[in-house]
Length: 528
Image 1 (cartoon, rainbow, N blue to C red):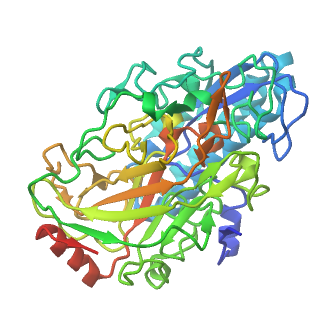
Image 2 (tube, rainbow, N blue to C red):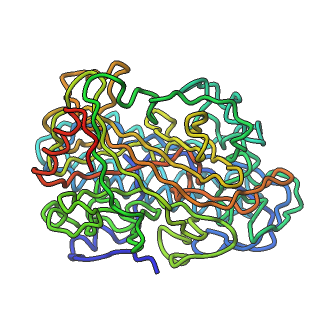
Image 3 (cartoon, rainbow, N blue to C red):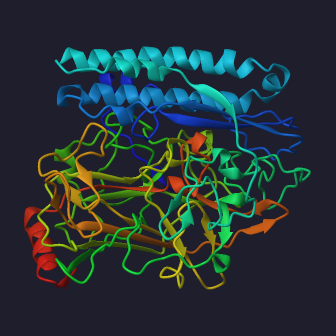
């Protein structure tokens, strides 16, 4: 049985976390919904888990500017309050998406319903929340950009017409070319070019899936999110990390340090995120796997994390490594089917435990690396990449036996028999030399340039590389639908898109072990 850890809820914390908050850098989002004439109304706060017969469908979106990305100079004293308000913005988007999903008949009968009953009230809530952020910042003497108040309004728009229902990662999906010619639609192509419920398939029910709706939870994935990896033209570059940059090279600091922390066999899960939503329960709105540090939840202090137990074999590594769980949507349910962040928010299906979780730190192509500071936080990838655009996306999907040939960014691979699904992430490896975090959780770290250099006076640090391997039954594509898909947990409005995969790290290596790591890397040794 998985566990959703909760502890130390003070009355102040309880007030702040009265409802869920979403894992993101801010309150932006592109909300997507299918409007169906269906045989059943939704339950579980708007998330339909019924098998629905989809008739003609219409897709609409609500685009909300991302507030958190703009907040780069929040005073330290205001960050807790601002984080809580950003979580409120994301909670509001989650509620709006749930309302879109549960009011299909009303929308079909009233063209102004979405604007009047959902978007208008959402703007009012966002405006009040942004103003509370202003108060939090100015109360401690910080400067607030009044232009941020203009980010309250959200707009509605129709989704892009269907293209590429087959999901070929090498096709023109949004016109943005990345990494070896692979097209990455991220958030550029509304709805990912998918027929989310628009397929005239008679609402066939296969393997317990809501095939017309896209996925068992009704909010994805769909057929266009998958591609047969054997049919994708090779695009991988040897020695290139998930961000498209050389990971180590044949010069500079060529060593490595591997830490073995298991695969979360003890099922340490929660839907918190102490980095972006400290003190906020369900701050991720999806479930995380945790390896390493065993005390990570929304309420954990640095002191508690430093004193925690660890699953790492090297007890000098109490760092926290966490990522969204991968689920098999085969009609089955897991322990959180009725929980916030789980089935209540469209994250349904059997949680898959990785067969391998390889955690390695490597060097810098140009020169030596320096030690990471204790409690350094790094987020890589963007849990909202489908709605935010792919500026911060950092995703590699592949299959064993294909990793040196094909790396996918906006598609889930269908692997051939005997091959396993692989998720690979290479983290930022340049640090500003001062801060263990930043207001938007991005600007204190950066990716190295192609030659390994760090810009703006940043210093090279060991680069964390995480490789996760899963035994996943291969989905089948039939008549424009996907049977028994798998997907990462996401925010509801991000529709379980593969581009939203992300990874989180908090450094709690002992100083002695960190020094050993740096020495191994700088002297070209392979240590573990």
